[in-house]
Picture 1: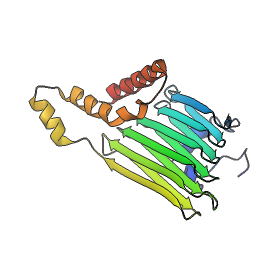
Picture 2 (picture 1 turned 30 degrees about the horizontal axis):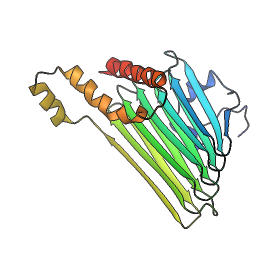
Picture 3 (picture 1 turned 90 degrees about the vertical axis):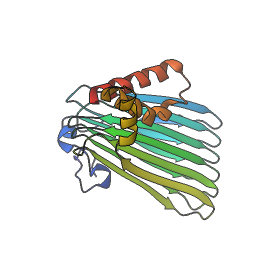
Amino acid sequence: MNALTLPTRKAEEWRYSDLDALAAIWPLPAPERIDVAAGEISRHHLLQDAADGAAAVHDYVITVADGARCDFHVLNVGGKLGRVTFTVTLGKGAHFELNGAIIGGGDQVLEIITSVTHAQPDATSGQTIRSILGQRATGSYLGSINVARDAQRTDAFQSVKAMLLDRTATANAKPELEIYADDVKCAHGATVGELDRQALFYMASRGMDPATAKTLLLKAFVAGVFDDVADEAVKDRLEAAALAKLEALV
C-alpha cells in the first residue's frame, strides 16, 4: 500500500478500524523507532488519552538486540479512534514484554496491533492485553508471533481477555502464531465475557452499591497489567487514568 493511500478494510490490520476518523489525520507520520542495544534494558509506557472526537495513532518499530530486554506498558482510553501498533524484532536471547489495557465507551474504536518476530534463537516474549468496553465501543487486539526457521527455543505467549459491560459493545481478538522452527514453546488464548453476576449479587448483599461493586470488579480485572511498572509515578498516573475511565463507564 502506498504511504499516501488511505487503507481499506480489505487489509486485515484495518478490518475493525474507524477509517473515517483516520482520514482526518492521514497520512500518518513515520513510526517511532526504539532500538535496544545488546544487553541493555529499556522501559517505555504510553497513556493514549486523546480528546473526545479526536483520532490518535501511535506506531512503534522496536528492535531488541542480543540479550537485551524491552518492556512496554500501554493504556488506551482516549479519542474517537485510538490505535497503537508495535512491530518488534528480537535478537538472540532477547525479550519483549507488552502489558496493555483498552477501556472504552460511547462510540470509541480502540486498537492494539502487534507483530513480534523472533528472528534468532532463545528469545522470549509476552503479551498481556485486557479490554473493558461499554455502550457501543469497539476494542480490538490483533497480534501475531512470527518465529523464523532458525529461532529455536523460542518461548512466547499472548493472553487476551475482554469484558463487555453492554451487549452493544464489541471486542475483537485475533492472536496468531506463525512458526517455522520446530523447538519452540508458543501459546495464545483469548476470552470475552461479562461481569460475574454472582459476585455482583454477593457484594450487593453486603450493602455495596452497584456502581462501586462494578468498579471494584473491573479494577481487579485490569489490575495486573500495571503491577510491574518500575516507576511509581508512572504507575500511579496509569492507574489513576484507568480508574477515571472505569468510573465514567459505570
